[in-house]
Length: 285
Image (cartoon, rainbow, N blue to C red; front, side):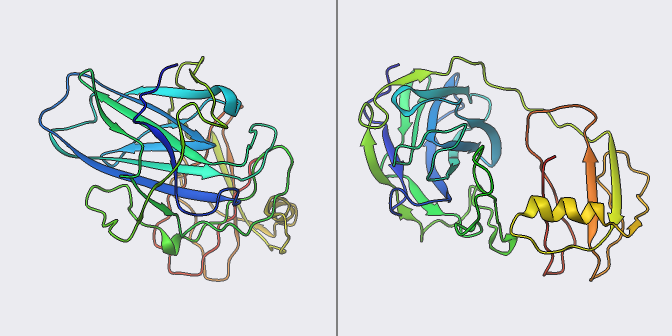
């Protein structure tokens, strides 16, 4: 697959090979008019989430080896607008291999934007980059099958995907490789169609109060709490689980979201009314 030479693999200035990196990239640009067609080609080592003009677009890439790196293509015609536009990309890099990813000691983001048949934007040193301060890199790895835990402090959460976010103190992205260089010797269009994401509400939500005994493995911590639950919490009559029981300051609320059948996806949780000091542990069973 041919990628324009102007597109380079970029990363933040943090050392290559660092573990558990969550990196944010931004690039503002202008268009004279609403495009008739617009296509983005994107890949990352190892995973990306793509946002355009404050809207979530897609995640990827498809699972692959670095020497045959998969490139995803997304039609973004409807999202772009006349005037100011913003592409924001969130990239995760574990810094080690596991059962669904092969690490080769380098991290990077590769992206090109074609508008009305002309290359308009490419990943290079004009992009802004920053490590996400909300994610901890000092975490336990608890399984050989996947990446480590996620520990996130929402006090440091920022609306960095917004058009008017001030990224003046972000650093310029570093070029780590040109297209065709190691470890990404060759690129290929993803052999799979882009997955379609839909919101699925749980079939049943149960709630209990119970003790929480600290454990280095948060999954075990949650399972132990369910086994020793002290009382059942009355759930409001809302089927999708969007409304929860009231929780006092010292309560430990245990929630089980039963989706009703097997799914491939990730959980999205929205918290409101936090007063500070709350801890949320999430585990998939």
